[in-house]
Image (tube, rainbow, N blue to C red; front, side):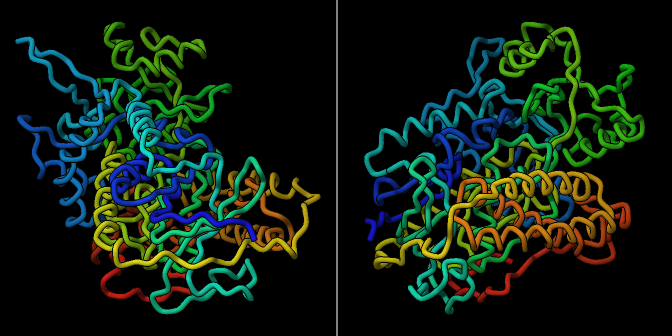
Length: 558
């Protein structure tokens, strides 16, 4: 038998949520952090805009931030959760400042230095703390440095979680039936993890498991996200018996660079916060026709407006122009974008940037309570993997990093409250490969991967119809059967694991979209173009066949 890893807390994911939680726990617990690629690789690294938080001595207020978030969320935000997150925001920003995250500062006319705050869509005030236009990199680099210096945190790079392990797993069960049944209040006690470099699967045992693996935007053909965003945490939790909610609300960022050689390069909303205009190819602005807030309307409105104009005119992109601002201002505030665009022959100080919408953020996810507890004891979900009720039907810009830090802090506190009362799990069954062989048909994986992302873009994108969704459902059902058969017969690979998770998440998105008979927030359908105001808005909650209602003290929010 291979030696099994044992930790107090197993953190699956290495972005802002996962690393900040590990740091908060490391004085009291031994932590394992699982990272699919290098420790820095993930959505946090590519976040440009910033983290929203109400700053002291400003015109802003907690209540204004709350109301802006709820308005952007189109009636589906949980007000209690929003109030909690916003109230905790300044505390989390100060925590980051104390870690020496280099947020941008400026001097006022009287020579006093203070933090420069920017404004993004949906915000009525400047409240976004940022590090130029590379806030995510500044935060990730700081967290990684702290993690590497802590002896209680072990980092496993190039490792990929396959499935969660529940305590009633018996050695007689087939590995593919691992999470098909579970007892009342069955705990999550670890996970099977693939070492991508050594091509071997190991058991990680833990008193607590935290899913912080990000969202699922890689399910779409065009996305601002890196390759690791394959919905792993959401898919694993669903298979284990957790409810998921609001998966129809996929946010498409309005402005990603459109260039044949560019891949997944987001152009931050902060440009529009500093006066950039969206233009048609003839130089005509168009956003005022769609919303009085123009370029600073929430992302769902801006993305739909761009999509409408592209389809109406048959054009491949629109243009984002900030060239009316002084060149020095542009270079100092947006150095990353300036440099990257220049690599593609675009000088943003003198010309407009070609942009298109792309899948960006998963507003739904694994249902949790305010402490990050899922339906399964011992299993937490934080960050983009989770559904807390903060974002409703549309996430407001720069509330994602806020969510990461607020709820990682809450989950850490909850784990510390329980840690002395939870024993280490016993030796667990090894990963069983006795009945599988090496694949001689890898083309099946690559073909299905391409097909999935293409039909999700075509049929489950910015604008939907019942017919498109039904076509997508038919195709995802066929792919699911094909992939599961393949999974049962061949040894797992990185691409197979990610494809299995993506097709599961795609099915959850399609099911959720089919069940919502209205247009709301990020879900827009031509069959039901209006928002249903005759009934109270409801979250879309999907319940797996193996779901068992959790004990009252660990119940996820509904």
